[in-house]
Length: 501
Ligand code: BES
Ligand code: MN
Ligand code: ZN
Image 1 (spheres, rainbow, N blue to C red):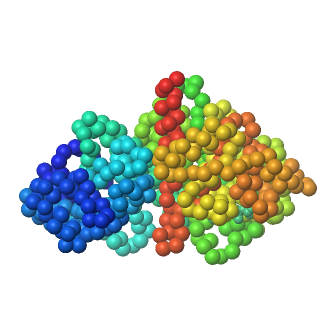
Image 2 (cartoon, rainbow, N blue to C red):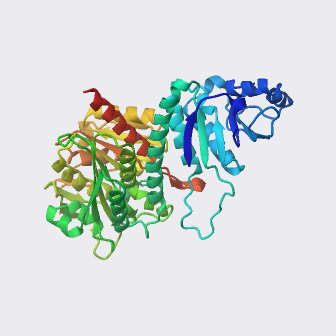
Image 3 (tube, rainbow, N blue to C red):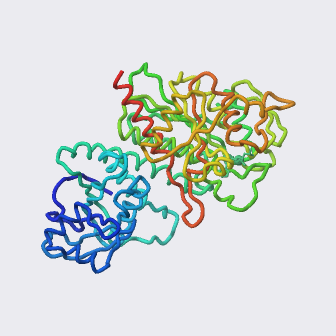
């Protein structure tokens, strides 16, 4: 899909389709009004007859409207003019993309980016429009033998800005939107692949292709023997019950000053989580193929970062394993020594995410990181607490948490903070080892973060629990690519601050 930006009058566009908004009840947007004047009231007479109320997401496609140069005009319902916020705007653009794709306009000029959206500027509206269009038209059909091809799919979308002086803002917005969408699409593809294809080895191979595709990216894969040498006993305890070998992937993006400390992203890469000997119940267990979505988001964010050529250093650290109940699997009660030297009593083999992450977090120290952010589908409790709308955020450094929450707000990929108070640490007690890997039912998302906090004392760290946001269940089952937009926004904000110093 190709995007561009332009400014000019809607009635004068020579296009396969011109897209304008209609507010509820039956009111013309500024662009619709211009077409109406040029066509002697063609649109207002349609509205008077009751063809379109203007409800959010409604559409009406018109052909060969007299006195216009476009083949089609698509009217899109925008709801009440004063009520357009982020989620309304999202619906408006999504319904536009779907309709255009299904009705044969391979190219279109869209005036909806000129609507006013509460608290949002031109840059935001254009970038979101690119991201939402990609998101809406995404399909994962590479494993279907018969594909449902769209006969004349949408190929080119031109978004308009009100003034010529806004063109360069629009172009930068499209550039960011395209880079983020590329990262999101990669994260979705990896997430949607089943566990028998997307193994730790597969992820390692995919990482290598990033090394090939981007000059700024270097990838190293550590094998099991190297993990043994480094003393990653916690990670290895998870991999033990599987026939798939674990992989420890390092993705280095270097495009900052040599001495510039890196930002580290650590992604949970459990390619399938059966629970291990603490086996999960069968319903919806297939969704545990998504347990590597943290890893996928690290891949995606690094791709977006490389596409944007951000002037900084970023390192992705991705511990990958499969959690299975083989004859050699870890038993509940087993005690292992992590790379940090702390011993862990594995009371529940289904709390495996924190085990692979803790060794990766210790490994991080060697990069002398500026900040470390881990991303993981860590706890079912987070889905209960926040549902599918917000990623859970915890950490040991308030300014970092603050920056993450802000990046979530501005990228419309929202996160919400949970407390990581000392009192919660008391729940983590073992009679036989330094720490247990579980801490009872209460505040499960927070105690999981408490466990991680025992391994992150040497740097500023935040943890993103994406169990609720990384994929959708039900009829719309599929990876969302979240939180690639949030992570990329965090990096964009970070380089912007760097430049000011
Ligand atoms: N990957 C799961 C968390 C999960 C479960 C995410 C369901 C999304 C939906 C994680 O490895 C896990 O199994 N966590 C356990 C922890 C418990 C044993 C302390 C959980 O949440 O039940
Ligand atoms: Mn688990
Ligand atoms: Zn898991």
